[in-house]
Image (cartoon, rainbow, N blue to C red; front, side, top):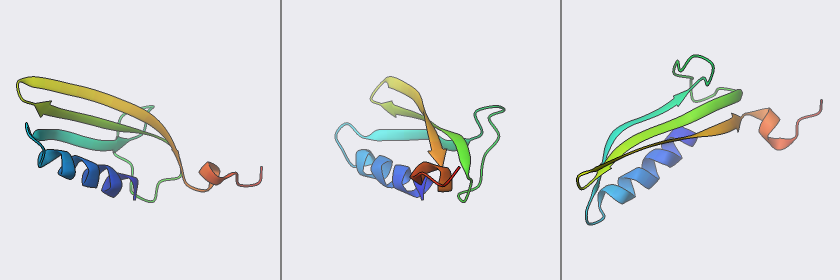
Length: 74
């Protein structure tokens, strides 16, 4: 769901002027940068690289996914 939502936002930006051209969008394990599945529970990193005109933008944000996100009993 996170990957699809991010992709939808970036697809909207691709229709802007100047357009955003996506280089990559990855949902990865922050420990080793391997891709995680869409149903992943726990920590993840959403990493994005894109171009707007001649400028390349690179960013990432840490995420906490799954049951732990919504205050599951501890």
